[in-house]
Image (cartoon, rainbow, N blue to C red; front, side):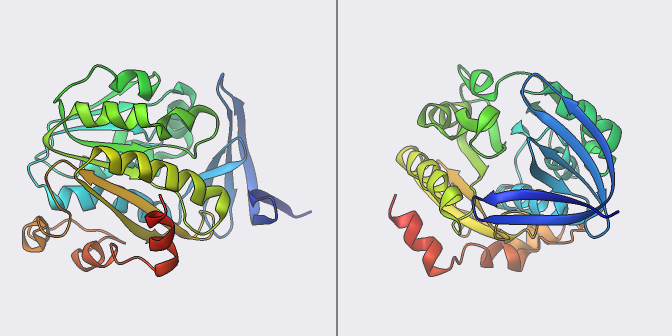
Length: 282
């Protein structure tokens, strides 16, 4: 008997993956967590039936959500990750010896517990002594912070359920206050392709560009996510991801990556017209 997992990516589009084993089902007070082992994508986990990451392509997402900001400002020392309970974003950040502190805020402790046990290829990033994990609402955590972080990465789920508050103007306004004068905000920015994702993308972009002097969007190919075309937001009070980007300085670090490189850094900001049009409509 064949076992398949299907994710409804839109009301008329499903993504199906042939599964070798359904490893775990666990209910937290926020959501249902499942872990699977698949033939094509290796191990993956889902929240309320939506795929968060897979062993085969997680590097595409985690490298692009971290290294673009780090290459723009090599002086980043203190970072806040909101979401990211799988540890993949923390894993990439801890590769930089210059980073002194990483605060990771995830509302659901069970996500971290499950990933520590079953998704070790990303969760090992949580073991670094510089990573401080806080189990609370990211919206509440960032409220009241001021001039504290060099970088905030919003590694959130889609804007449904526990992640909904992380797409509001109040939240982005609090992030603005929490950043110092050279601070950078990076957020997973949804996809422009399907309307169900393009609408929250436009909402987030509208709020962010009302607050930050520099507000840009870049892209990556992530096969497991709806349409495979995924966007990230880059916002800053001062630093520009192309004008202030020093490719030589980043390359001199000698970091081995599988998706990100300094050519991708520059090229990822060249968006297709359909995506540019939707962003300009905000």
